Image 1 (cartoon, rainbow, N blue to C red):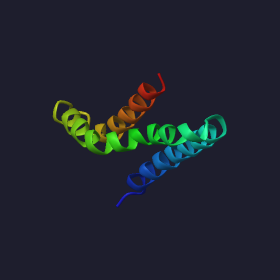
Image 2 (cartoon, rainbow, N blue to C red):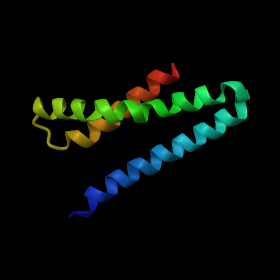
Image 3 (cartoon, one colour):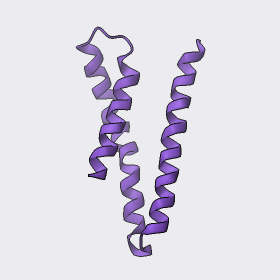
Image 4 (cartoon, helix red, strand yellow):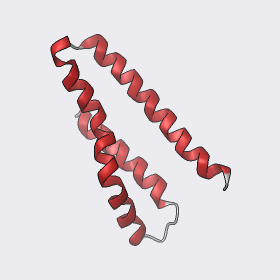
Length: 88
């Protein structure tokens, strides 16, 4: 197995976990205790949504594209889109 196949998911999850941890610290510092669970649940929703929708979107993209690297970048675009839609 080639090293770039392993390096890309490790790099992706390191960045996503770093952003998630910083967001949790920000929420813990700036929210009231009664609302904290709701805010933590909202920050975890992209992981839940992407677990179910991501494979379907990736396969649909690959079925209609000749670009063979599409799966990796499609999942990143879906993650960014979901995160930005929750922030608005």
